[in-house]
Image (cartoon, rainbow, N blue to C red):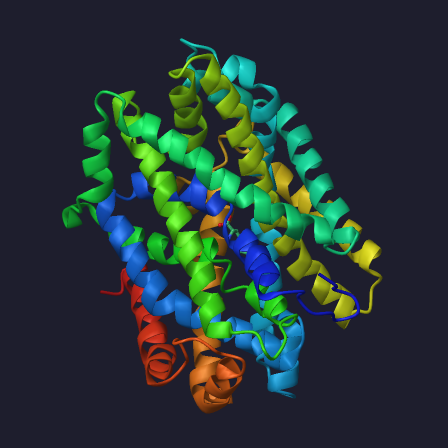
Amino acid sequence: MEIKGRGNWGSQFGFIAAAAGSAVGLGNIWKFPYMTGRYGGAAFVLVYLLFVLLICIPIMNSELLVGRKSQKNAVGAFKVLAPGSPWFIVGVMGILAGFIILSYYSVIAGWAVAFIFKSGAYMAAGADHANIFVGSITSSVAPLIWHAIFMFMCIGIVAAGIEKGIEKYSKILMPLLVLIMLVLIIRSVTLSGAGAGLSFYLKPDFSKLTAEGVLAALGQAFFSLSLGMGCMITYGSYLKKDQDIPANSYWIAGTDTGIALLAGLAIFPAVFAFGLEPGAGPGLTFITVPAVFAAMGPVGHFFGILFFFLLTIAALTSAISLLEVVSAYFIDESKWDRKKAVWIMGIIIFLLGIPSSLGLGIWSGVKILGGRDILDSLDFIASNILLPLGGFLLCIFIGWYWGTDKAIEEGNTGAKGAITLGGGYRFLIKYVAPVAIFIVFLKSIGVF
Ligand code: PFF
């Protein structure tokens, strides 16, 4: 993928692999299961699916078509389509969200990198997985080193211009990740006591659903699909006119949602079988997965290493898209050299991540939003506020300012399949999506 000279995606599949690579990441495998656990199980999943379908897919189409139409980064796109207006601020908010998300994202990804190397202790039979995990993330220096290593990998890839490599490897490694997850699911659902986990995950109990849970489902849908911060605008800007935006949107959203659902299926039966707490929070995946693999004996050890290797790759393809959004802005708008932009932004983001990591250990006394630690608070602000707000404003921009006619025309250019944008898209983007986001916001701050 050529970035600097405003190139194009080589093929439809190449684009889908890169965009799905951005979407599929820690959000699916780490965050979706722990959010589901925290907010009550199947009812949360159903609300999540509803938001993907009614809000996020129309917004995915919109971001891609805004990108392709303007051929610009998140901020530049609004400057081209709405010159002289303040709409570009939506893009600026997106860049800010990108900074915040990548700062803690890299801390979590660092844990996955560490697991590849420390798997011996983590996956030994009889190991106390919860204690080992908590011990390792609460120490001060080691997690920061893994965080630095992960950021360094991102910087290296993005500074080189996202070379063919990552696109090429994503195409092989992503399917491999799904395969390993299937192994994990089979082992997980056949553990004794798995049934309680399955019913927690699959049988909705709406009495467990809170307003905060609904907001979290909305934020999670945006986060998981890489929406609301201009990432898909940036990726869409490298699309050619003959590429099919509506079909691409369904492929990306479908892949992303499918992998999140599979991750839940791998995790929850094991959580219940091992008597762990589904609401355990950010450690859920990191504790359950080694526990399941350890229960498989030596072959499990091998799968465990492979799993965390693939999780690192999934995190990397997402993290580079985050760093790309931030850097593309400084390259296009401030005319910085790519290397300079990527290194400066990468280092700032690394530094920003330090409090998130320390907040789990020596700074664990620091609680910000409603008792949340630093990492959780930043995630809350970015995922639950900035991303849905970015999505909301994009709906208003398209539905009420730029116009759905222009959007539909651009979106359908190159559409070959049965799916095209039309009355349904218009209705969702103008009314359903913005009203739903607005209501969820009001409800979560307790207006009614
Ligand atoms: N979608 C990624 C995940 O689920 O892990 C995270 C992410 C990437 C969010 C890119 C936002 C973004 F622009």
